[in-house]
Length: 240
Ligand SMILES: *Cc1c(COP(=O)(O)O)cnc(C)c1O
Image (cartoon, rainbow, N blue to C red; front, top):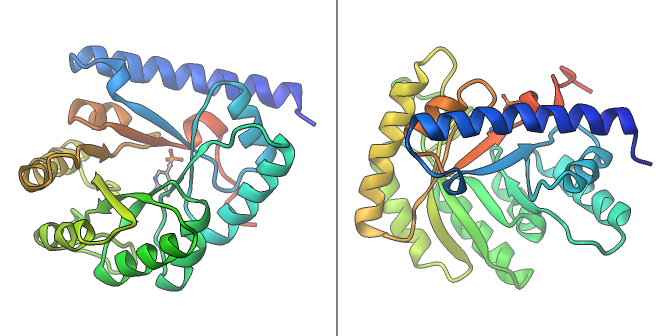
């Protein structure tokens, strides 16, 4: 079932990534324990998820509901009752998928509008669960509506709404650095948005930022959660 060579590839990818995170934490005078690594397994099979768990990974990220849902089910079958990873939904969420996402996700990083918050809350109530949520912030000066994310100016209002919803727990903010923009600028700005949010919501301390290409910059600017795919699993097939 578990392919020995693939496990060695994943072990090496994890070790290289861990070394980068350690070095970035040392440079930023931060404690490694403040930073969580989420391994993004989109486009890769459930067998990789199982191998990653064997290698000590506890947090898995997925960005499409249909794929995530199937993979969670398959992973549970392969594990046969062993503990499932913590699932992070990191992709753009359509409102009609919220009920599905609420069944398997533990953390939703991509909350960006009131209607989605309400739909996730209803879905979580139906599944009798509570979801940790992060507000996704779009820091591109020329926002692309296709990409998702709340304007920085709307974060406060959205946070207020989430605080009033029984099944959602506001944890912080998330961003994806827009292509072609300097990650230091983007993550520096995200740190400011986070600090403003915490003045009204002191528990919303998580900062989800940083991927394979820019995790050092994210750590330097206070990221608490990194979402890393390619650097650990290899390059994704372009489609399937
Ligand atoms: C795919 C994805 C990642 C991981 O990107 P890599 O460059 O493969 O590390 C992180 N965040 C989001 C939102 C993603 O969709």
